[in-house]
Image 1 (cartoon, helix red, strand yellow):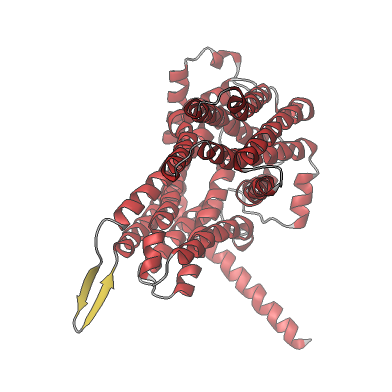
Image 2 (image 1 turned 120 degrees about the vertical axis):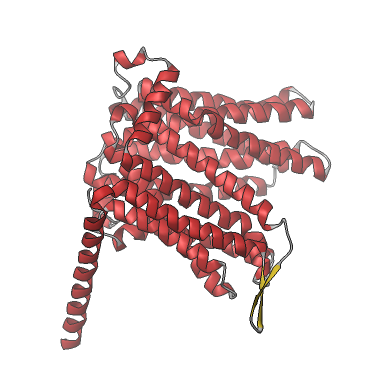
Length: 468
């Protein structure tokens, strides 16, 4: 397994200088901006069509839920389509469809004054657009390894992950907030303006892919594979995923990492109360998780350079689980925030390692299906963990643990964190054993040798500075 690399300026410059990847990254940024902006604008547009606060809340939540459903229902099938057809044509077709769908939402409000019809069409268009995105994403992920040298694959993945979860959400929020503050635009008009802008990002993405990244073409399945039925193609992808110990361990570990992050988010509102805080504390915990996630993506590979990536993956999942266990017994906000950052760090580093392993080790013919399976399972696990943790954390009253003369108050959220954290540590160990097999001892030895080498370098550097 190739060692991890970190996002330094030379590696970044080398990746960005590759014109096909640079253009695909631009396309991906536009598409991601459109996805985030579409999520904000469509939900707000639907809510603005209603009069009462209750109806507005129901419309907002319904559109959000509808946009999440396609990934749970259609993810694996979308992977089959991404593998079967020419990826450039697939991505262009999807982007043109999304342009038409998002532009049609505010247009429907101009053509009809029936609010129920407008909200219904917004939900239907959002569902269809997100279903189309389920084909676009694995096609893009499967195309990236064909455009760059393998030793720079992790750098490219770092760049795309930071774009998805760091840059474009902020730009989307700023664009939406800016539209809402325009003097000539009210709430409904601002959402409509944002939707038209959102539609244009997909049209621009389609143009760049079609005219600027021809290298993506020719990566569809061979002619013999295209005669395979969709069901057979799904079974082929599933057998490849579950029949390979490396990928089996990868899926186990990623699901464990996303479940841990989801449980932290789902129980955070109730956990913040056990710290003596409220909504502000919840907001800080939520922000700390994403700060840690970004740090794991950016700084994790630098800290783990030269350590086998399989070992880094397994240990990062265990690190996240251990931090969740510590959360269950922490009583001070500052310490809790630091531990949540560690949870996010472990999840972010595990996610980066997982994406890089799939891109580098999975055959091109099935890579789209594997990405689709993994992305669908991860999102489903995240949503299930958030929903379950929120319900369980608020289900009962606090408990008391009697330890001799001491009485300790235990909230349900803390018990949940303790169990989830221990499960996360176990899952990380199982994942590592699956991925490493008989090499697990040699992997640990390689990791210890690297740590010892760094310790010697650090001591030598400190001694050199003292002599100066």
